[in-house]
Length: 98
Ligand SMILES: [Zn+2]
Image (cartoon, rainbow, N blue to C red; front, side, top):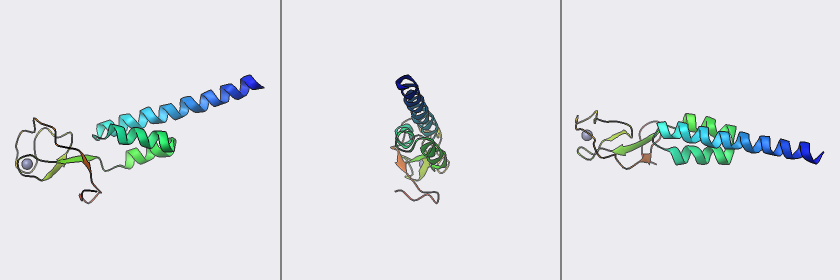
């Protein structure tokens, strides 16, 4: 029965790793790959759900200092080209920095 136990443990490991990768991929789209991956590692499938629920990474526009989405190419407030990525910070759903 050792083999079966080993297989089960391996399956769980693979599932957990998939959660970490999936969390990282979801996080990456929101500019917070590491946070998403850590959610996946720490909480498994629940962490993936957490990553999906994240408000996403935001940063301050270098020109007008308004919070903009990390993926933004152009600031929606002052319409400047965002060639340099803003520093990522986490914000709550109502836009306050954490
Ligand atoms: Zn701006």
